[in-house]
Length: 233
Image (cartoon, rainbow, N blue to C red):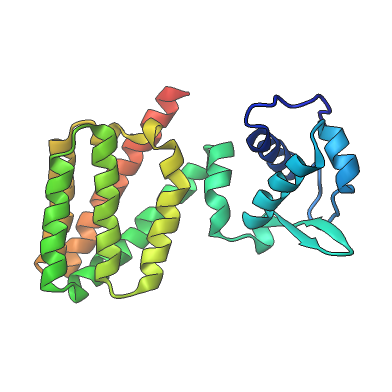
């Protein structure tokens, strides 16, 4: 484990990343207790206050669990961790993105079919307005964020709040690195045209067409985003 003093700028962020990487790389095994705070702070060359902030963040992310009188235990993230860990895992290792996109595609097709059977007239109009926002976006980044709002509205149209939370979770996993994934949205009018069959099928209450359109759209954008990520490496 490195023991050089961390830079003072963004020291909590840097320490959080170092601890996270050490945990995921196995330097601190699942189920084990971290060293006492005094020793751990000295090991990383930081103050105990800085260490406490970093440990709190990792505990909130589900990687650690602190119990008074016992210490801070490393959790087995693949056994007990939840979706809240995805942004952290994607930021550390881009190979997680392929799995995030696969889940996005499978969940997205279910959402599309259900939305087409449950959407209200008001939600149909809202989807059309959001689609227009994609087309009118100023640039690729704005178009990508507008596309996200379309999918949030599709999830709302299912009437199932769990679908909305799942949608939020999957988007939260990759939005922090979205600038490397905006290839499908660089031409906003084309992006909107590609998304239109899905929106129209849901708006018009055609569940089978909505499911097929979602599969086509999500698979196509997934390929483009992963290809752009490879190019950026």
